[in-house]
Length: 468
Image 1 (cartoon, helix red, strand yellow):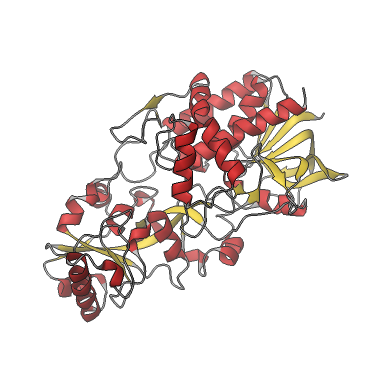
Image 2 (cartoon, one colour):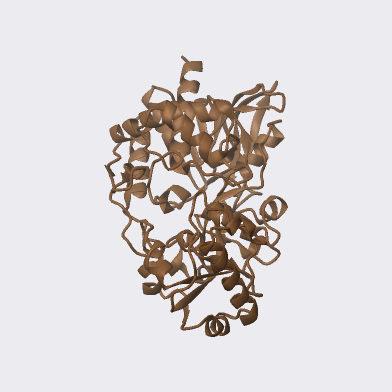
């Protein structure tokens, strides 16, 4: 039987959409490839912070819109940015009516963190935490209103008729050659979470050596939604950026040091060097952009962050789940030495190159002339600090990808757009399946949970209006 809305993907965007549509009296089916009741998805792995561009989410739409423009350097698509700014505050109010509980910290933009919060430890402590609790409550709401959650079901293709999307064909997860099931619908929402786990697409668009990039999230985004949308004639944004963070390189082999602590605060205070001990990037661009820069290297596992005791005791303790002391407690690799020459020997770096790099860098920092370095160091967002106080320290890094920022283009109501800017009837997209809001030259991040939740709400409400 046909339903009003079929949702592809049971992450935050998909479940918000399904819960809102069912709340409005519409029939809903969610197709989720995960089989377990607590199937993994990026939202479950997240820190649970709702914000917009590191701005208090309950700020006025005008303030939030300006924050998006600052963060994206004006590159965010206007319709999406305006929709996000106008509906973010309403999202958290709606989530509260669906079982969400929030706490706040003393940091202004961290005023809505899902409770219970993550503990201040490294590793994967997501079970029973705020995002996990919220997703399970949304499922309960959906099922209580007659909606269906089809677990173990992977969407394979869209059903198109005269240019309109009228449903989805799917198979059992892990069995692409199995029996095809048809799910007819008035509308379909693609919310399956980007293409970060598809190494072929990752290699084509983002990383020269995709196997050397750590999957920092649930690694479930295989790009099915993107592929199906393209087959239906959809347009896409640029596909070459992702949201992620810098991690200890041990994350490639150990689950104890990811998705937290992220090491962005150390990288934006210290210096990043290659095996030759030389800087290769502007550390002032921020952690997300640095993760993108590392992922684009021929060898993304060749980078080390170098810093000193003052940075370790300062920025090293600044994050909500800080590198100091959580990384050491989890057994992550941290090299320490009384001199730069000894540090280079311990970390496998060229001693002469590192010594010359640090000397030149410290001189530029002291003279406030870091823009004149051979690799300029910007200071507008993150001040440049000297690497001068023993013991000197180094941590081998890797880039951790959480979700891709590029994807299907949508309008302010989340309708999927064709290259000519007109919508494909019956087809919607939300969350990290979409593109155009984040990304750009500096890999700008505006808040993944907020983006997913708002777009899920808007998709459901537009479908409900169309089926009135």
